[in-house]
Length: 127
Image 1 (cartoon, rainbow, N blue to C red):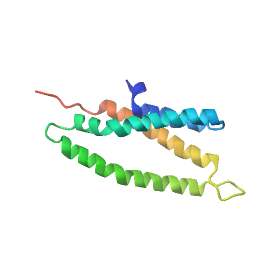
Image 2: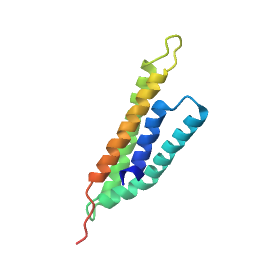
Image 3: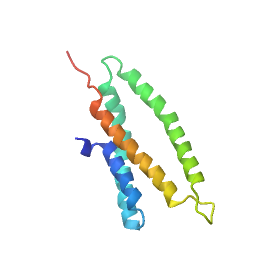
Image 4: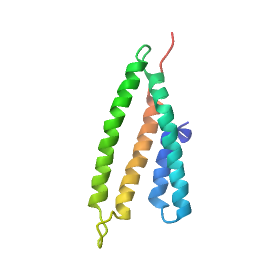
């Protein structure tokens, strides 16, 4: 179940980027896997939030999710910009491969945490 989740696809894709980013083919395959996971998440997350919300509160849950997602993405983007701006090549003001690996590893770990959280989120019961 966790192996097929979009979160785990994101985690596997970013994890693969940490080790397989040198060639065009390897980079293309891993970025495609990440894109698949992110695309499935973007389409399915609102449904998942509504499904897991208490009866009668799915609209509130969806609104909170959408409201939190935007600033959280901004904070993550800002933190990644700090990492990319701090871990530079020795002879140029450009991010090093290590800076990208830090970002990709953070994304991979976040995907794994999210996949685990989805497994433990309670489902709405009818009754």
